[in-house]
Image (cartoon, rainbow, N blue to C red):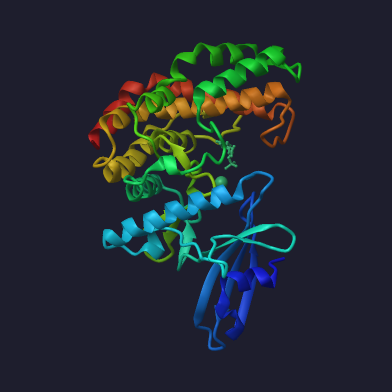
Length: 369
Ligand code: GN1
Ligand code: MG
């Protein structure tokens, strides 16, 4: 239920409504989302909004999280306007409450927020996915990073501390192996051996951030196709949505994670590893969109590491699945007992494939620099 006091706190014109539709949107897994349409009796829109109740069992600091989203969307809007673009299309727009805040706490203590609905938008994965989809996805990430390239990312809080600290993820794996809480380490002997053999890649990005060799930027951390909105008629990219995991970090986190998912020929839990391969064509198309849109602000150090970042972020996800398997499946939802081990093996197969193709991937990325 969307309480009326929540609507009224963001939308003062509601007193004059003629026809108000409230519909629950079921696609997200974390927050509770409603679409609110205010129309005249003749059917013309007077207002069109997204209301969301923030899941505070996952996001324990909703005020810090909303402050991140406010800073990032305001900066992105100003950048879009300065570039002669339409901010209401190129970024989400938060509504302010009657208390002049970007969130509202209801009588039961729930945190709510309200965005303007992106006009005539549809998710990128709703239309048919083709190689061109990856040009668009890469372009969407480049647009997001470009609008925020001159924003001081250290002003943002770490919504999930150490989210892509691969060295820390590696220490967590060592701990999970030593503790072997599930008693399943023997089932994963070769996988553990493989995971431990790649410690040398865990510092590439985090050490670069710490030394300043890689710039600190705003990262999105969930750049899947369903979080990219396009215009329903022209199919032009509008913007990224789902800004809950916006945090300070490296541009390589988002590039690498996008290819972890979008570069694979199979789902991340495909058990038949012969079907799991890294697709050079998807990498090429994503590079076309991403490097094409981002090469003027990315540093050489970032551009040099794009292929490696795909391997590192895939490896990191693999060791998270493996650690969770050893811990007894406490973090990721699983559908059957060995699900996390299947996922880990799948990711490791992809890592091997990426590492074996690094020279070729550098050639591809260099075409667009
Ligand atoms: C989780 O919630 P979802 O499915 O978008 C995880 C990501 C992993 C992904 C792997 C907050 O993402 O980091 O890459 O699973 N998100 C969080 O499927 O841990
Ligand atoms: Mg998400």
